Image (cartoon, rainbow, N blue to C red; front, side, top):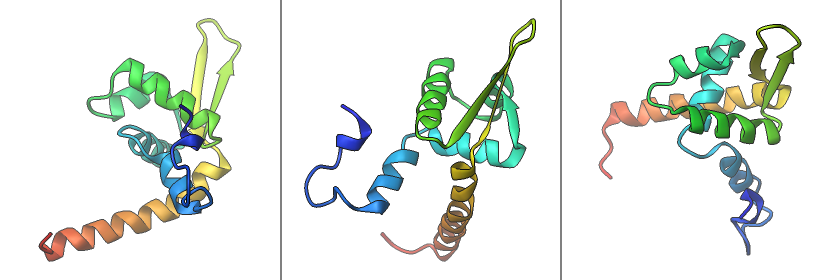
Length: 115
């Protein structure tokens, strides 16, 4: 089942649902955030910066983010091979929204609102 087919019906044309679907998932936001802070990272650097992520999940999440046009993968023709990951312009455009969401979350935590 593709991510685009998850929300059939009245939410089909909701841009917020579409955006949250692209960056949702346990590991996508930590990857995006790590790349935003470090600009360009190699695979092992990225893995070390995200506590608890497995090789399989990192590889899968990077492939998905690359397919969505959020992460850029650059492979260098060197021995040994070198691959670097960075945010695309679409990924960089996401950062102000994520910062605003983080600020909102911090404010909500500090007020200890009842659920």
